[in-house]
Image (cartoon, rainbow, N blue to C red):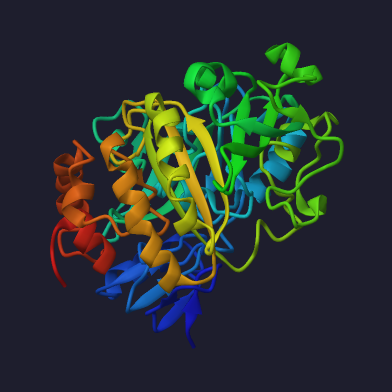
Length: 420
């Protein structure tokens, strides 16, 4: 039997999928097998999670273990998805600070690859972690807490250090969100108003196909404390309020998107772009994303717009959003407030592979870093130069997985600097 990722563009090399019964069973599996990886929700698009030996699934390990109201934390098992966590957490009066575009992904997988939502003051999902429980290559269980010497290296671990069995996340009091969509924001507005535009709401996303010098949609998600944006605007830097619910892809129906038009809803019903019960985005698609310092948002937008003829045949839609800086070694947001340029592609890898070098060359002057779990063609040496803490991260790998039990061709190439 073969195993594929969610998009169907990558077939893993694993020969077996095992569901461990308990912690002791999982530890024994790690000890027994020379190569082993976790198969999560499959929402990565490259080979970062691949193995040619054994997959284990923690899909049944999806319990919410503890809500600590005094410390404002929640502890979940390694197989829980954000959708499952949100459904239970929302009943307690608490919330997460942010969500990714879709809630179908596992918490552990999102944390491992520095997955993020949107918001100039919102850190990545990885930066919400307070504690991680991990099984290393010897089968030993370790717990890393925020403030520990190695924590900043372990949080965004890329699957290279071990198997995550438990995570503790920071929570906040539950909050209400209103979502408004605006149409046709001129790209030129970013020249003088980028900071104001992205700080205008709790979460802001700009959507475009780059064919015109405008973003065809702006999605704002506002809390009551955001002031005017919570009630909606008649003019948003030249963009006008949408009169009906919209999908980021103009030719698709909005029924699978979270509620718009200013209808109030709980945090978990608005922060993601897509409802839990619907298939996210375009379904059969590929994805890439590049992240850089926020100061480059206008110049980078102009650079990508210049590539519109290359993009037209293969791009569904692009999303531009912001993320606050964090202190996690292998995070693309390490020590820099960032802007993300996301590309949702048609399911044609050969065509996408031809386009990516143009984007990467255009964004190279801005020191763009690719998203770890998405498609890119950046040379390994160039990528490694973008992460100052990579040598320290390699020391952690040598400590917790010296023989490369959790490694694969992707990690050997881009992280360990080895060939299999």
